[in-house]
Amino acid sequence: FDDLGQDGAPARLGIMGGTFDPIHIGHLATAEQAREAYGLDAVVFVPAGKPVFKKDRAVTPAADRLAMCRLAVASNPAFCVSAMEIERGGDTYTVDTLRELRGHYPGNVELYFITGADAVAHIVQWRESAAIADLARLIAVTRPGYALTAERRREIEEHGRFDVSYLEVTALAVSSSDLRARVRAGRSIRYLVMQRVLDYIAVHGLYAPEAAGEVRR
Ligand code: ATP
Ligand code: MG
Image 1 (tube, rainbow, N blue to C red):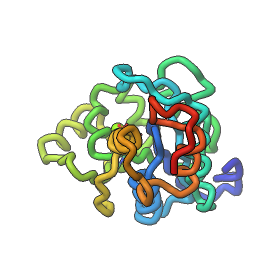
Image 2: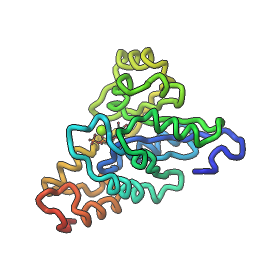
Image 3: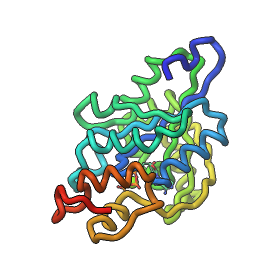
Image 4: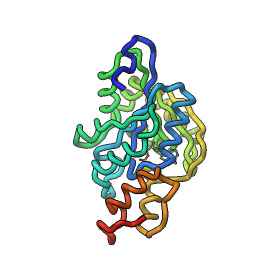
């Protein structure tokens, strides 16, 4: 979306960060509903290089997560994928991503960082959360199983003077962790990810340790 804001008119860019291991319908529906609710001109999905909160498990190679994101968003002209966090290398920090995007676009492009109720709870621990607050507005979306209590909201707002809006999105209790577990157990994840992502997982034998290379559908 290089032409975003180039004509001087105000524009709004949504940013959807995540590990996307794999990207699923919860991510896509969330981005779409945030786009609609806030009049975002585009949403960019930014798969994390090395997620700082996920050091406890082996994350699927970045190239695969990136490829699945690209397949998943291909049918939506308002969506795109950026490899910026993967290419940057090192640990992934949201503040670096927002700074890079801020530097890339003119001032009339507003940044909206979209995050689920579970991830927004981490905000107070994020590196330079005050800087994040200056760079982007936050859209905190509902996610089944993760309540954002009034107390939690107050904590977030007080901590980094965030401009947060709360958006209720269609409740989809889908998580990448559950999808990985299903594949590992030989169960179906059809309809929970885009068909092209399903095919990619099968062809590349992802998430199935004992069936490496074997094609499963
Ligand atoms: P994992 O189980 O591996 O943590 P995940 O499903 O939580 O995977 P992430 O890549 O960690 O996916 O999440 C990226 C972003 O999408 C986060 O802000 C997260 O809160 C949000 N998100 C993920 N799934 C949903 C969902 N079903 N509904 C709403 N938001 C979601
Ligand atoms: Mg998660």
